Image (cartoon, rainbow over all chains, first blue to last red; front, side, top):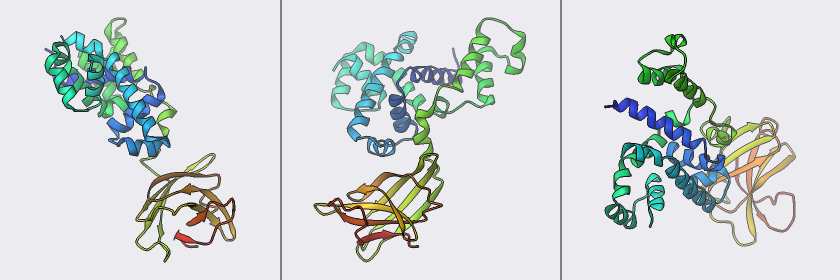
Length: 77
Length: 212
């Protein structure tokens, strides 16, 4: 059985590898909302784009990320 | 809702009856729920977003191999070089796209703009970042009434009688504005209420002002 620390580190690595495959715009939104904890409105203000743009980028980014991380789910099944 | 939509929404941290209904009726998504949650946790972690320290790179290698990085040079092929390469990649993944949000954490300067008698109860501050092409500013305004019809608020920078506009806005909130000049050269910041009439000069109706 793998240790929790190994699993956490490995997941972080897999997530980071998946993030690298996203567009810079999608990465920005995920960083802002997940890591920095900003709302869509705050992210829009920081990036200088409409809130609707942030929401659509966020939706697209999460779909891409879910698809890119699907192999982790299969591996653990 | 299909599985793809569920997994994206779940990764985003959303919750709704539709999501709950889907996961209760979908064996595949129910089995994936823990991994999706782990992915969401990882997205909040520094390890995903920041450059790894030598200690973290060493920990990655040690976790996989049991061998500290200082000794891995004696091994060739197999997992160690792959993990070492992976750790190296961690240092170069993210580029200029993050610059704006990274800068948001540390302005080069910050100044308060007290309200004048024309805007009682209002307050504002400006955080500024000195850039090669000028100055990026985030103006945070509270308690300022929305600009009346046919009017906008305008932020100015000035030095003595010389002034330059940094852009317009319509009310309270966080507003990002740019100017092609440095605050070191134009130390006064002030906001006026302006009619939208094509006139380039400030109206004189000053509502917020650092003063000279």
